[in-house]
Length: 348
Image (cartoon, helix red, strand yellow):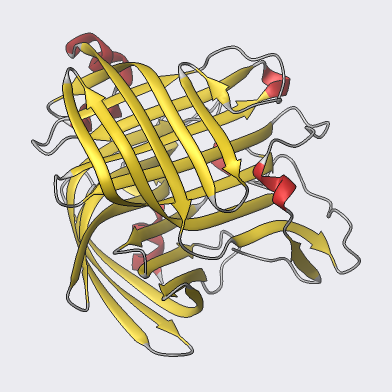
């Protein structure tokens, strides 16, 4: 994660739970989990983002089925505070800080044969049926925790510009997953699942992101990779961070690169990634299997062609003889239909 000058990280088990919201209108506290069963070909990601000062949460549930269909649901259920991570039929529970958490969902999913349809959500929700779904997954940490709250060198909270901030604190971790996913009566048991999770809190506007590429993948309980590359809106080098998990120990990422191939709509189709740690270098190959595009447009924007797009893709990763399913998340400001990460690279 990017660290401003003269700051450090403070991590406390209490950070696993909700925080007292600070007095900014766009305070956000969110948790995100993904889970994959490579043998069966099923995957999922779940998110709750509490926005207590706005009186609602953001709840998203997405399930990738082996036949290429995707079940998806997004809602903004009303909440009255920030006491728990539970909204819209979804609940996140901390069973043991830094070690075990539980995710459940009971509700409906929009079952799409073409997940790209979510580029126009109002049309997609009219075109596809909603089907019952339930998830019950237990996540076990198989890596150290990464991240924490950014504080100054004296341990005091730093000042943030709420109009441009995306978080005050941020944590991530590779996971093992067990449980089940059921969609429209079809049940998938997960006994040796792999996954990843993150959490953030503090002021956030989604349009404050410029561009980033985020590759979290767990090949097994002993081997995983997280590579994050963020574009710098002020110019200069990209911000590169992440870790490689080897045998329960994190090797911090020192350098990295992602080369992506896109289709005509600028959705990723395949990619390669190079990762360097102090111990060695790694090369990953990725093949995108299914992509759900999400969009966030700033209220009152005068330019309808400029918005933030996040592509959420289940991908098949290979590295050093290992193969596993994982997420590929690309976030871009879109200008005239082109991701700004691409136009910025072409202009460099």
